[in-house]
Structures are given as structure tokens and as C-alpha cells.
Image (cartoon, rainbow, N blue to C red; front, side):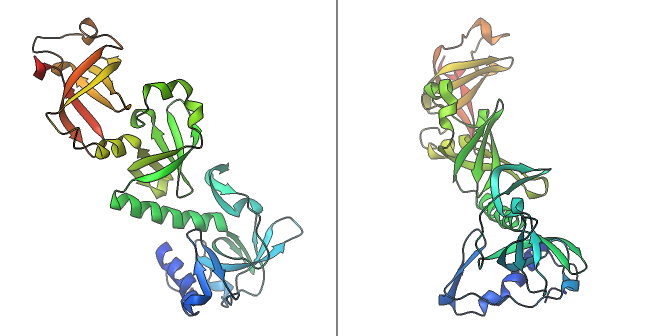
Length: 302
């Protein structure tokens, strides 16, 4: 059953779920977190423990909690597999060792879960529900990334460089430069915890456990009609930088006014002609849909 030579993770997942397809459709469903719901408990297929390797996805029925506090699962090998309670759920803001996402969940005897084999020693098998759920979650995120859709993420942590959001129970990072906040919201960013934030993807790398997302990309695509090149926009100078000025529009969306686009006259230092908080009317030069950036000009209005 699991004797395919060097199967991919995708093949392992498909093989582990083959037996569910043999049941009448009305008897069971598998939800997005790998939990099997059914009107009658599905049979756990027999598995040769010698065929199991680290990374194999198996179906396991929760038997209960062992003497050491770990969960015991029937995975069809004849001996219960062991799973630490800290490996029983995928949580986006939990960290154990160097692998982010393991967390605690109360599992009831009889529940059937997908689990990933993390160790095999003779007849003893160690499994993790959290790691199986993570593999599924990364596949969903990769599909969302390829489709370039917006996703309503939940804000779960704030830091100096940006915020951490939950995407399919995985942590994603939003740099502050990619979160277009209205002016009033910057004063009390802690109030943003728990809020929902529509984002689009910038980078997804499951191998490095890295996901970077952008609210700016979502906001720009929602306003393409009014941000098309040549349109006029109004805002305030939010920041002066060596190469120009960052202009924040009324809804928090920011654009770059490059020093070369400030005036038809030569400008060596933008601080000589612009001040922070100054109101400006600008022309949209370019919208980059890849990262949601805006290029602005005041020179074209002279």
C-alpha cells in the first residue's frame, strides 16, 4: 500500500486517502483541516510498518492518551502510534523548537485524523497531525498564490517591521509598507489585532516556511479605475526620503513621488521644496500590479 519507491508528498497524501473513496459518499466527508466526519467510523486499512517512511501520510483513529501524556492512534500497523499533544493541531502563532505551528488540541477517542509519520523505530511509529495539516495548508496557499486571489487574513501579531496574519492557519508576514492604513489607524495599531485584512500574495516558499503578503496589492487592484495613469489623486506627504517623497492618499494608500518628478526645475533635495504633512495633488504615472506600488508626479501639473 505504501511501498511506492520514493513517492512525493502529493502521492503519499493521495494514497492515504484512497480507502475513503471506497466508502459511499453519503457516509463521510473530509474537511479542509484533514478531519474525517462520517456517520459510521471508517475502517483503518492495514499497513506494513516496514513500508512506512518519514513523511508518509496515514489515517489514524485516536485511541486515547497514553501513560506519558501522548496521544495514541491506530494507524493500521497493529501497534498504536504515538503523538505528543503538542503535535495535535496546526496553530499559526505557536512555535515549538525550530518548526512553527505545532499546538495543542483536545482530541476525542474515535476521531479519525490524517497524520504525518515523523519517526519509525521497529514497530514504534511517531506521527504528527500538525505537520500533516501544514502540508495540506501549504498546498492550499500555493494554489491561492497561483490563482492570484485576495484572501481575508486575520491579524494575529504586530511588530516593528510589520504584522503577522493567519492565512489557512499558516503565518504570513505583512510589511508595514504593504499595509495601507488610514492616518487615524496608525496611532492605535494594537486595536488591529484580531481584525480581518484582505491581502494578496507577494512570496510563497513552503520549503523555507516563508509567506509574505500585501494589503497594498489588494487595495490597488480594487481602485484600478481611479488609479489609472493620467488620473489625478490628492494626498499628504507622509515621509521624505533621499530619492523623493512618500505621498499617502486619504484611504491610506501610498505612492512614491520620485525626486525627478517633483518639478520641471532641478531639485537636489526634496526637503527644500516639500514638507511632511503638505497637501499635494499628483498625477498617477504608473501602477505596478506585481507589488501594488504607485508612481506619482507633480511635475506634469506645472
